[in-house]
Length: 254
Image (cartoon, rainbow, N blue to C red; front, top):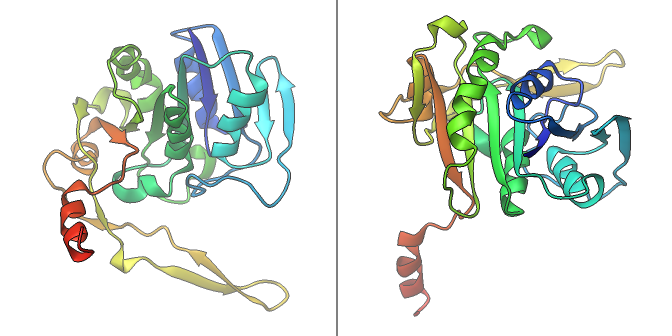
């Protein structure tokens, strides 16, 4: 089985090393193609206004000067001799829960794989507090990663779907199990913007990472993580709101 690994934290990120450890429990045919620098929050963006450069770092290991989407596209179109059987993206430093997935480069790398018809799974490690940098503990992901992936390797999945996995901010022995849940939603009305001045006196702004209010609706990824479970959520790329089609068609005389 050929596996492609990527992420949005950068090719040298600790979480990618954890992901490689997990992937090697399934195969030795491992390829890595990831952004050369951190691309958190890049979403499903594609680099169009400047050239993308590819650097070979080792055997089957490459870095791309672009976004996670760029990295997957380069892997599929330039780097790999044949498409992978599965794409794993992560392990992200931090949660990708609820509607945060729309910002996530980790999830978007998996989206690009799903668009190409390849089984794709995003993995993220929740952590308890901000400011931890590379000290985020990946113990839960390392211990539970293969256990969660095993049933997903050959599970029947519909076209243009992907799987989003989040590991709780707990020691491995404290994780209660695995739940298959739906996507939850946050309350973004209270987000903050931090203002400061650089050494030359110019103003700058930094989006704050304050805790976001959310309602723990039953059966969501947010609830599962809050209660100490690994959250497994199937996602689809068709964003059409079908029940509204008829309503709008009537408005336009259709």
